[in-house]
Image (cartoon, rainbow, N blue to C red; front, side):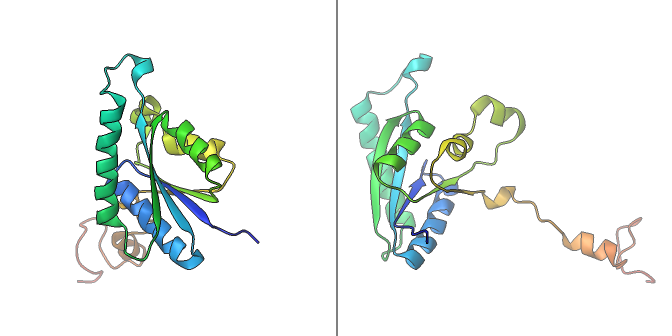
Length: 170
């Protein structure tokens, strides 16, 4: 039987990753697992982008991590926090291997089309290369309902599709 002892949740301190953390907390409550919360500072030096010195950047990330945990972690959940610098997908996978992670939970930002192609997807790379299961959490604003109220009304002929109003026979 597969036992979940360590859950890795990645965070960029956004509401997207707060949602992933909510899922992790629910699962940890059921399995008594430890949550490993990881933030990766993207290292842009290879791309020539000027970067804040690493210690200062890590200090800021540590402060953001503390605030994020204070705002989003309930008092019943044990969370270990870590900040790393490098390529996010690589560092996430490296951390998972070093800490015997049983499950990775990562939020997707819902980018599609050109934005997805240009920016890439950390979540996609983690899913593709992970040796442990990965749960992706899609932000609710990007979830499209499978069936809307209008679809049901139209299929049951409760509305006049041509005019879009009232029940049939009104």
